[in-house]
Structures are given as C-alpha cells and as structure tokens.
Image 1 (cartoon, rainbow, N blue to C red):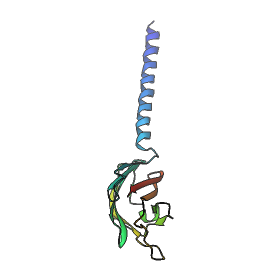
Image 2: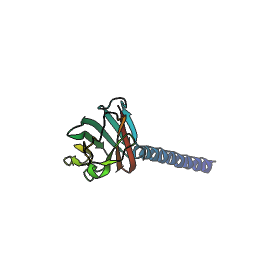
Image 3: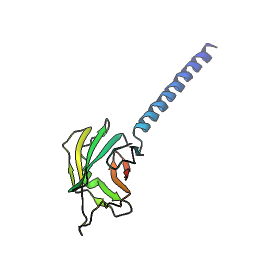
Image 4: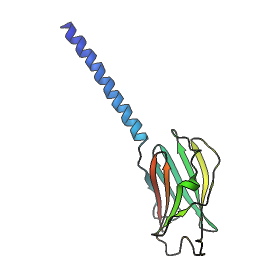
Length: 158
C-alpha cells in the first residue's frame, strides 16, 4: 500500500512537470509566433499603424508625401536584436494595384531592442508621375523577414 502511494505521488509530480513544461512552451510559442497583425485606423491615410509578430512590434506613421514619402518607424522587442535589420532593403511601398516601390532610405541609429528611424520612398516614378496619385485608394508598406515573420503588411485606406 505504501509503495502504491509513493508510485502515485511520483507519477503526479511527473504529470505536473509535463503540464508546466507544456504551459511554458505555449507561452514561448505565443510570444514568438510567425504571424503579423496590424492594428490602427485603416481609414486614416496618415494615422499610425502597428504590426506585431515574432516578438517584434513595428509602428509606422506616415509623415509626408513630398518631396519623399516618409514614415516614422518604431521597432520594439525584448527578444530580437534589431540593429541588423536594414529597412531600406526589407520594405516596399504598394499603392493600389501598382508595382512595388523599393525604399530609398533608412535613417535609424543603433538601438538594440528599441529602434526608431525614418523610412523613405521616392515620391515620383522615373517618368515623373507621382507614386501616390490623387486617385489612390490604398497605400501599403510591406516589410519582409523581421523577427522570423516572412511578410508584414501595414495598410492605409484613403
């Protein structure tokens, strides 16, 4: 009888350890998920938009349309080193169904886990027409491969 109680007590401890490990693993996976969500006011062309995923939060605020299309960018995390990300290489601008426009500038000092900077795109195409015409309905910035998230889409509706 005593041996049976000891065996059951030992088994209960193992079960609690497994449950604890599963709970911890669930929290880690939730924090390091690979989906990016966008929050903000999509109806506001110049409002801030936030995307979260892979343990990294990125907030974009459109500042100007001319002479360049400029966004303030705030990157925040507690798990990923952000200094290695060159947003000039990772970000593209999409207006309605038009072609992707590669970022032309990224000005951001090193910051480790908290980084702020300015992301710019050209305001005109090579033929001189505006990248964001007056009739444009949607503007989106696509950011690739930050924090293990293959693609983040931050979109504004005009």
